[in-house]
Image (cartoon, rainbow, N blue to C red; front, side):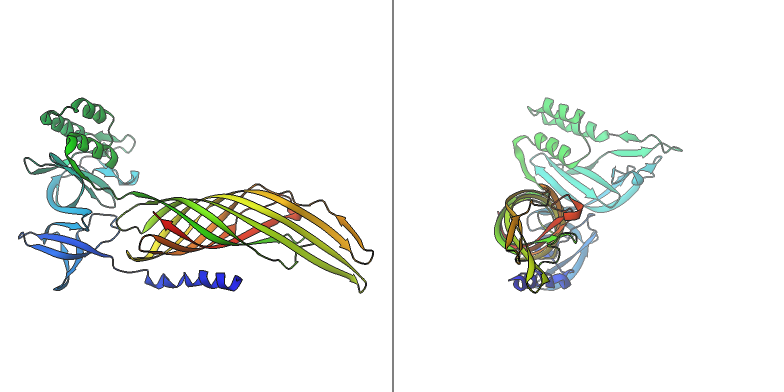
Length: 417
């Protein structure tokens, strides 16, 4: 059984060679000459809005870019539009080191802006690169798109006090007055404490669209899961205990788990933060015989049961990432709370026929830490088959001379709701 579990775990690691793979999604592209192309776009985890992308249809594969395309939509979830603008602002800096010094020279650029939310009156767009984030607003009646102006900069000659330009609040307040909506007061209150961010601006634009907000394009997604696993556990003893080199019989017990998966990009699903709670149990029995003479030996025996509740935040990455099949690896930290029962410890002198019970020399720790290392496959976005090794970070007893450490290996299956 041990060999089967080890082999299963190793087999899960084989798809590592598939790290670099395409991720073509159904897409529609509108060219600058208004011609429409229907096919597939290689959709990636873009940290910055793309300048170009790989497109294929029944005529073949080609690279299209800002010089060719008016707009494109991927899998009916992500929409990008071409936009030419001139700006003197640097937007929301990604880090303090990206904040500019002094006034900037006007810059004209052509970019793809991504649709965040849309409605009858207004559309909200975002542009991101490795240095900054900028938002744009489109007046659907006037068919005009403009930058929501925000800037943060150091005044000329200083790098001490950051100054801010929040002109975007005034721009949105004008839309609120022009809309004559019933929720003007609520919008104005939100603007007073608004930040230049996805959540704040999306909420304001949706309010300005009243009941006509048709699409909020967010990449974040949260999904629950639940499952079962088989756990192989092994207890080892420190060198100073009589049972240090005793042959160990592993424990095989079922367990249950459940939790939530948080995706940074719900369309691609490459990176995932998993919050997992599990309940498991183990039963250990160790016996060792020391021969003193041909007629005399000492037998040491220890038996106990462990019941464990675990909470494990983990980071997972789908190395091979297709809709029907995904291969992932992950690491995390596991917080365990254990109950120990049926504790029995004794020694027997076979020559004299004396058996006496020993007081357990282990001071069990209820709280312990381990580091889960896992690999798994996901089938059709629903079935998660995994192998996981919990590497001990702390001992399960707190007396150095007689320490006890429990290691576990799991194979199991989760259903992703």
